[in-house]
Length: 212
Image (tube, rainbow, N blue to C red; front, side, top):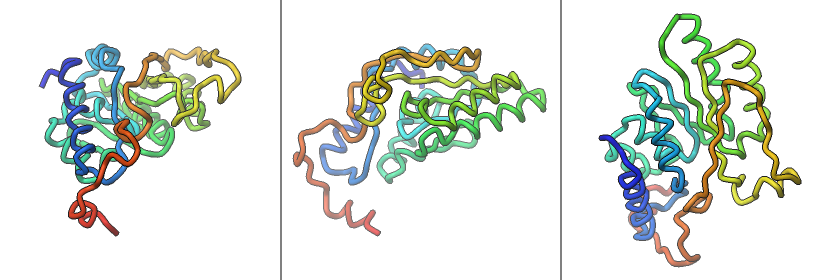
């Protein structure tokens, strides 16, 4: 499926509706506000390239070619943050900056083997604050690895903005050909669907199905 801004937004609003109906008794991280930026980036990503994503992976998964039905099924089984597809070279991690070193390793092997594959590693500006990100960028830059770290800067680490964290609005200039950044205003909160507190009653049979 060739996605557009409209199809991406429609998908997330369908997930929001299922959450509002009490069908998703677990944490979801919805995407929104960055549709056009991602469409532009993914126009440069080939089928044989690798994509590493985060806990907020829905748009990345769809744009890497995973069918909507498969992504929705993963979300509805409680695996919103753990969507994987080996055939399409798509991996995620819910650990902050958890994919950065792995992306470097895959890029190193691609360089050694002479592969045409490029590695794309998506992180938020919260993960950018993490030492794992800095180490991965330093290694990738020094070894000229075929990896691009994409900082999806929505000015929040959970609910804390950049200036509150660091006392300044000035972003780090990584001075690396391996790093790109784009800014966007998110349309959903960090977690959940942005619905009023207490407005969702999770369906008992679904809660029971996923209870430990």
